[in-house]
Image (cartoon, rainbow, N blue to C red; front, side, top):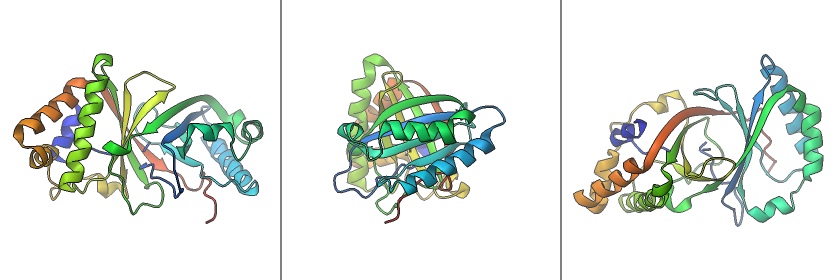
Length: 255
């Protein structure tokens, strides 16, 4: 399975990476909406998204609204639109009302959209290693979606915690973020997001210590094998895709 690739390179990291915005007390919820344009209407959809970004600017929306285009995998051609670093309570008091936002969406974008799916993910800070220098999403993000056996979800989470501890202990120079789907899909869905500055960055990195060697340095051979096996044996299936960040379609408020 694809996870074995990371034995030689890395356990990859955003839903871009979806790096944390500069909030005083950022939340951990990522609200992501998949929007699939109608056949032949991608250009009109993108023009509508630009119009909606301008509308957010006019409203002086204080928060980013990121847009990503899916450029590989089964969802190629679908766009991900979302806000990061949310608290659940933030949805009770949005800066722009849901009614006003929906009205503008229907006006600018809705007629070009075939389907919309909303999902909510929880960022897992204890098992992630985000890039502290990042000021926004990378140009590309590789997403690996893991579907974990229902009776092994706890074991998978526990193994990820040990992974996070190993990364911190060894100062492994690989940046990634883990998210768990908390609403809008199958239980036991986890997403690993790795940022890439360009296509060349997808190449394997011989100067980076392999994943299992890093675990061995942190815990010794027996515990390293245990952590790896718990991850491997928990996974029912996995899939991959690449997202391209579209700043021209996104809304990023002036600082």
